Length: 162
Image 1 (cartoon, rainbow, N blue to C red):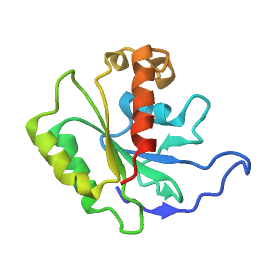
Image 2: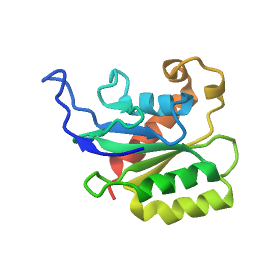
Image 3: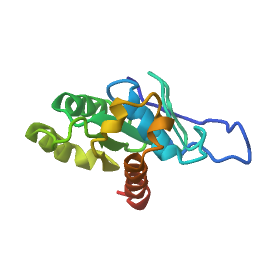
Image 4: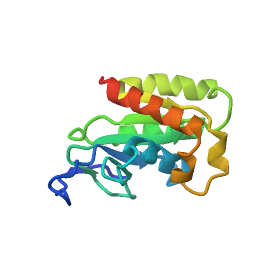
């Protein structure tokens, strides 16, 4: 995937500009869609955060966010993407979504720590079993555990700059 930053003309002059451009490491799935909904907020309607399509550039002013599961394979994919990251684009955040109710494998934890200096930050979303049963991210956000995880994710990403 090529990552570039381009200016994006706002659709509404009074509306907010895109704050987060999500780059799913493993393609679009319920985890990436839910992270986008979590960062978009209650009434964001895709104006604060949205998933970027394959090859789509990061809009100017948006913070790139890589979304990946907590697997060794995903951390290798993150490493490859970071090796090709253009110098003019801000360093991305990495959001790790737990894919099982257990800690990540040691190799994934090691690789994540090693990549930390090349990232704007690392945020973690706990295992949310409800994501296996919902039809949409909006449906997932009706569950208290997902709302709590969303609030924690927003605090992690908005309260820390590296």
